[in-house]
Image (tube, rainbow, N blue to C red; front, side, top):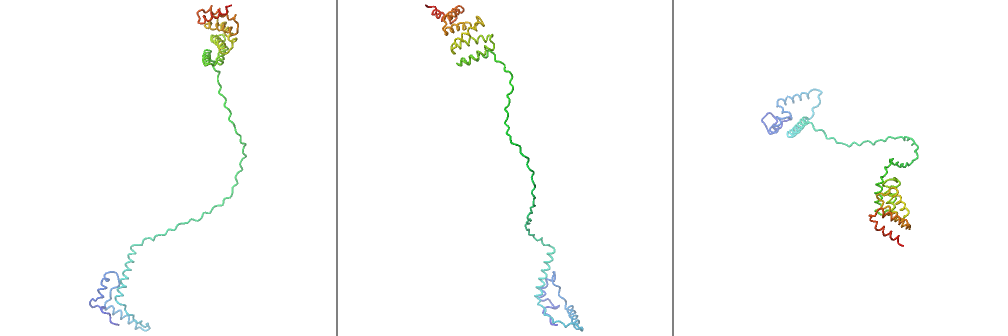
Length: 270
């Protein structure tokens, strides 16, 4: 065998021992063999080589330099440490790449046409007009009292509505011809006809009927003087003179007595 490189024996420590000393205390390449063990291994190898039929010994390769072996040991040590660390610290789960799920296009079901029922024949459209509501049954109205009708007639007379007032006077006379209200209505109607309606004959009839209904009544002066004026309007001077004479005799203190005397003297003059 060739001589070992310097420092490859059991002798004193050399520069290589200083380089490998840190690796002897940590995981790394195997420790160096002693000189005796190395010699025994070499001898065993030679004996095996000298056995018959043994293959020819291969040419001994040149031992790589110590610095190269030391570098390989460092690489191996680092790889072993990394493997231990990886086993003690499992790698985090790989991030999953989410791919959007694209749904498959929906298949539309084919619908078969369903026959619709035939519509019922429509009835003719008729417009119904609302029927007029029947007027509520009105009970018999209470007839107006004659006194109320007289007041209404006097109000119309003050407004100059002569015909309307005359209609109410006649209504009172027809309703109760023998009552006191009818007596007053006759005198008022005669005065209205003589002064505003130009009906002297109708006025004469109303004055005479009032005197027959209640002779010497409370309106006797107006009724008797009205009779004389109706005769004068009709041109009957004789009847006028008789009515004036009766008026002066019955009511000498009446405000109309002075005018009646003067008119009587005119009629008596030749």
